[in-house]
Length: 322
Image 1 (cartoon, one colour):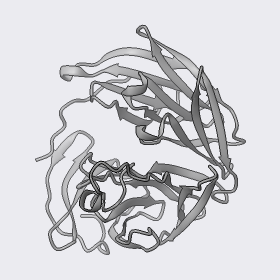
Image 2 (cartoon, one colour; image 1 turned 60 degrees about the vertical axis):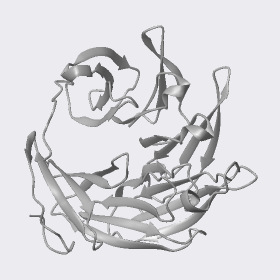
Image 3 (cartoon, helix red, strand yellow; image 1 turned 135 degrees about the horizontal axis):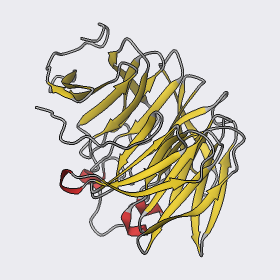
Image 4 (cartoon, one colour; image 1 turned 135 degrees about the vertical axis):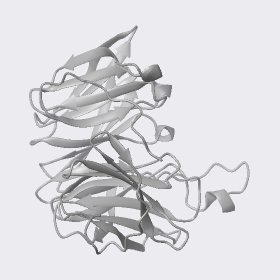
């Protein structure tokens, strides 16, 4: 049974576009068209406003928490073409860095796995993806992938810092050879996979085609080192696909239609164990999906505007939403 355990009255004055829990699940960051970012302490079912961060000059689309080993750091991106990195010092949240290297709305921000250092990927409507790398002493180095997606990039998501198959194959004591990778989704209806070359440049590794309209979100699933890599994608076309890759070279990805919804699907998000996918769409619903033993994706719950209910009907993907 899935139930709503807490609701937070954010007092945002306009639509909320994103809400993210921190690593420990004790703080909630929200962002809104009212141009603000808010941070709440939500321990023990409470809600205490810790910070009301003002710095953006347009709607704020997304927020992302860095790993706590780097301190309390939050990134936000906005229609105002800026990315702001906020840091908590001695209990006070302040702007630590501002990136203004895009020519249009910045739609998505995602921190790399902490193993790689403090690296933030940012996707923009100008078609470019920028990577901000912290080099110490308050300095950030920027790398930019121009023309990553024609018309614009809507989403970025990093691959886990786990070599596929390492759970089974990894010789003990040997340091794995990490290759940095991330996925992006764009207004060209494509999902693209990017990898860092040995010279530090980023190269397009794969194009994944299945959607017939703008890709709104991509989410690379966490991994414990099993051979299969998994990515979820959702689109303006109402469809959610699960992409899997079983070969070590990472060249062959096959899509499976999870479901065709009646409305745009805005976001997809994996549970930490990667066995449950949350899907939220234009119908104001969040649905939770799990893969059954026979490989079918099953809806295990519907959470509709605060009402929790469960349905366990198998979907072939083709039929309309129950």
